[in-house]
Length: 358
Image (cartoon, rainbow, N blue to C red):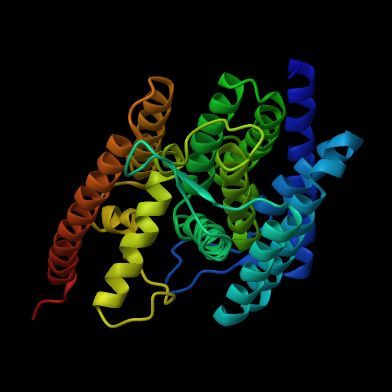
């Protein structure tokens, strides 16, 4: 991709996010402080919309790409629209999931792509799924990925930073395997995310121009990542990396989501009930500043992605890769559970120290 083209994409994303920010304030598409949200002021929820529109505009300049990615853009449009409505009016959980499932089915049917090959994860022979099971697993994967990215959007910069790490890893693997088209696709999204991060993290303009990603953005990013993973691992004509490598690329969002769901079920709560039990929340309770938490979690994501890339390039056995990933998840789950006890201790200590004395 030419340097000038990257600059144009960057500027386009910046212009869109500034324009959308003003519109969001007028139509009240803003995030307001609450018991679960510690920010101050009303923050426009336009980061994801600007990223989606930037990618769409760039693709529209390439007619051949529009024809090829029309299903992706159609599904993305539905998710972004649903996210906007949810950000403004809070859609019921069952309706959100119903729309996500319908989008997943559309991808399987019209994109003609699904998880049918799991690779040689148990033996030298590749494990393939029957059509019905393939569709079920694919729907779970697509819906799961969208919600995994939605769940990690809890502190400034985290979703954007993790997304850039994962998209960079994907872009490298596509480039390494001469899949220039999807490498180009990843590059567009990465460049479009950077202006959002600049405003979200208050790097230049301070809090006055701060924006949030919004559900529209987290759903779009999650859908984009799983769509790229499916194209990289399940395309019959051209595979860019092994299916088990995909687990390593999205290890942090995936493990965080599964851990949270298990924890909520163990505590007798709905797995869809929002709480402050995510890893970034627990690190906050321990007293770590948000910027340090952002650095730690993006670092974790980068390390996991590097392991996946290194294993892919060095042709490490898929059995070993799956066993290593499973072991990593067990360690992650135990550490997060341990942090839960520490978080409760520090929360009680803080409550005791701030309680009025007689």
